[in-house]
Image 1 (cartoon, rainbow, N blue to C red):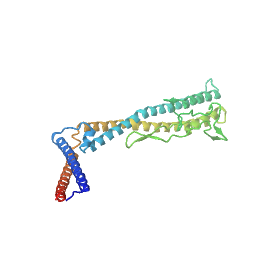
Image 2 (cartoon, rainbow, N blue to C red; image 1 turned 60 degrees about the horizontal axis):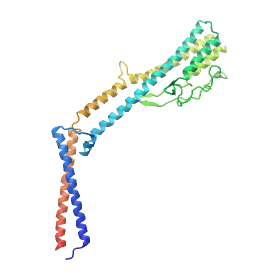
Image 3 (cartoon, rainbow, N blue to C red; image 1 turned 90 degrees about the vertical axis):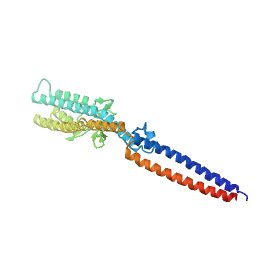
Image 4 (cartoon, one colour; image 1 turned 60 degrees about the vertical axis):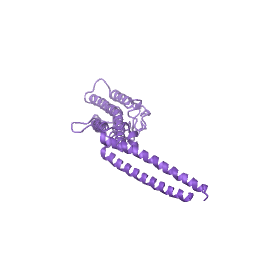
Length: 311
């Protein structure tokens, strides 16, 4: 009987498949032995790649992801916390200017009304143009540009008896910074167009132009002080979220506790964990049995088929 070249080619092709199955079985057996060794001896994986080779690296990858996220949050806190403190200091500085001006109303000294108001406006303009790390503290969404577009000392922002923000183009920055999975704080609550700042500029111009009485000016000073105090409280809440209080753990403490727990889990990891390893070992064993069964069946069929072709 003549043997077809196609039949021979087919036999060789099938033999190649069988050889690959033998290789798969060998690789699976190596993985199984490695996994069982980890379960029996407590030997740790040298790295994630080694664990993933055995098919049990999920826990290690999860821990690594936790540590990366944790580091990102701690970095955000390191950047945000001093910025919040700088913002608080700026609001406090404005309150000092306001209190100083209020003192000149209660106990007039050598300064005229115009001089007292202009001194306060000059100091306010300086504060509104302060920078922190190259960014304007009162810049709002666009903190790369000077928030003042005009001289607030000489230009009144009261137009037709209405307060305006005609001295600035700033808009409020509503963005937030995540400091834990559950907690976010405002990146910056300050901008030159804040209602309290508009009121302060208008009040000072009204005082020096004598369009407001002393009593009216004093009442406005109190209202502005209240607005600035509310702003300070909001900033303090954001700082407390990071630094904590007597009754609230700090975000930094929460993150450090998570990092310690992850580090302990990572250092104590025994081939990831026994349940996961055992499950993986079971799956590997099933794969080996399946591969051996397929290989054995194919070899038997190929042998029979060869005999038929050669007869």
